Image (cartoon, rainbow, N blue to C red):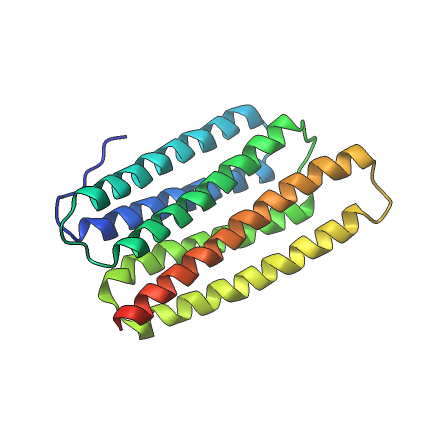
Length: 207
């Protein structure tokens, strides 16, 4: 992937937006995978490509962090935000990979519901990062409030899914396979809440 980013200090914000856009696109591809569960190995490879792009963006942010004299926010905050976005991308790719590795016959309805919430949160995150450079609390506060709501919604889906798995109606091996996918999707959504927490802390620090 060829990055088209300038050497300005504000280029960090551009990289964050690009990273979040790649993450949102990966969430959309994961939705396509669970909604149309065909050619799953090919779709999993596409997620791997998204994850590799995310790695490149993260490495570019860290490289700039190590070579820039002036940064638009505290260095530790840049590192925290970059790695938080990368963690979410890793979880999305892992969920797609697990669907293939475990030879899942069809995603559970709860998995589809989790992915729907994940897309909403990823979209909100991308839009928030476009505003981050403005350092305006009034613009960004609705974002982290909404992410908190979505994370709570995701928690409810996760708890209901786990309760259903252990309700006694499924084979033990299927339960273990499904549970790992469900937990990985929950990890991705928790990761987006972590991103929101970093953005909130940065915004309040510079407000």
